[in-house]
Length: 292
Ligand SMILES: Cc1cc2nc3c(=O)[nH]c(=O)nc-3n(C[C@H](O)[C@H](O)[C@H](O)COP(=O)(O)O)c2cc1C
Image: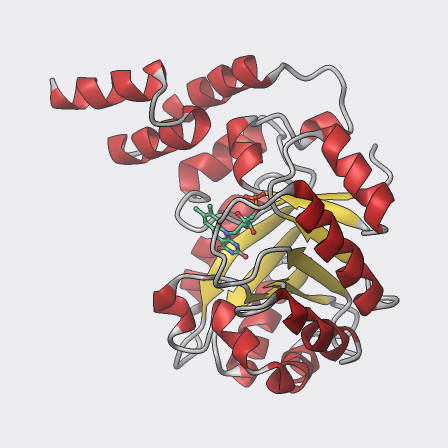
């Protein structure tokens, strides 16, 4: 077992039914954080919440539900319902860079008003059952990483947040490639700004070795891995099991598992693209099969 926490990064649009089943079946994650569940104007029906949560629960690992929205009270009520259904903890998304999301002040858009974050978190936390932990996932700032100097102490000192998931890029940086030294500088600084609140580092971590080095050089409490995990499906398991297959064999096995599920062809093609890339024979074969 790894001596720090290892989390799969939530991936909206990827993390649906058949994908979640296959991951659970192959025991590829030690825990889940769901993709964001958006709560807008009213509390969704219980059935909708159940349909969202149940596929993750089949893996018998703890599930943290990620929520997104602007109405803290409503988010708190939704969080409490998810907890009642068996979610282990709740996370708030303050990082999504999609313009559709940020323009409404949600996801990464929330970072434009750091002064509102602590009270938002406190309202959500107040609605959760006693002892249920609330975490946040955010980027280093809206347009400048120096914004973390305000954002992180605000969140860490709120009294409501017990863990911080930190994607080192700013919202404006989207997925721009940056040198690893920049990541280390930002993560190290972020850890210092969070004080006693544990920070889980995220962004471009693609091996166990890289994760170990980042943890020991920055003092972060763990790592979260999204896209590199899709390119090497056994990557998270490799942190605590050294008998797992190498990346290519892992991709083949995982894809074989996916194919056994009733996934729409489009979803399979999308997953092949994420696993192998646009130039791969696997992706091209699926595309030409579709055209043919
Ligand atoms: C397709 C896709 C969907 C994503 N959906 C979510 C989401 O629902 N919630 C979230 O907090 N982050 C989401 N992310 C961001 C990832 O969790 C992660 O923070 C980001 O990809 C950087 O980590 P990585 O370099 O390990 O991929 C998504 C990323 C991708 C590529």
